[in-house]
Image 1 (cartoon, rainbow, N blue to C red):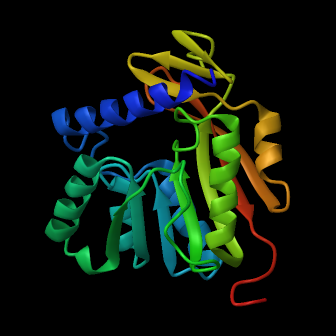
Image 2 (image 1 turned 135 degrees about the vertical axis):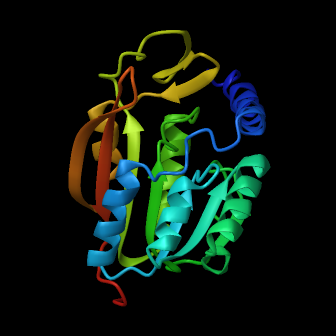
Length: 226
């Protein structure tokens, strides 16, 4: 896995870029259910700024902007981000959305304690090693203000595709060209160390259906605190 992983990660980047180019707006215009839930959580927490990791073509980033949040949307696919920007202009929310091409395996290009809330729908369960996932979550904690909220979703080991397709080690399986890191529950708990773990909610999505967890955790402190 150690030798294969960089090759796999680059292949996945190319696969997503091609997929967005071939299937513009592939997930539709409606926000995901986790994004709708997260918007309520963020509003209750007093957040005004949202960082979305792995925004893709932007259905959730656009929803956050329509709800009045200022959004920074990141993704490693230029094609997805271009579709997001075009949709933001059509919907009249371009002034509230900033896009940044970013690979989650690298540090976030943001200062410490600079955002109120972070959202990531199925980004952490992409072709990332456990070490890379832990590093990404550490970066989320770094850029969150004290008391900031992180809502993420991941497919877990109860999913029908877990163990199917091409095995890449570290609970990563490739099926239909997409590689997924399926989360065991202990990984969720590991990522919450040093945070307040608010909720681990099991849900299903799609026709398979995909089985996921929606995780909400809060960094220590309070918004605006020290």
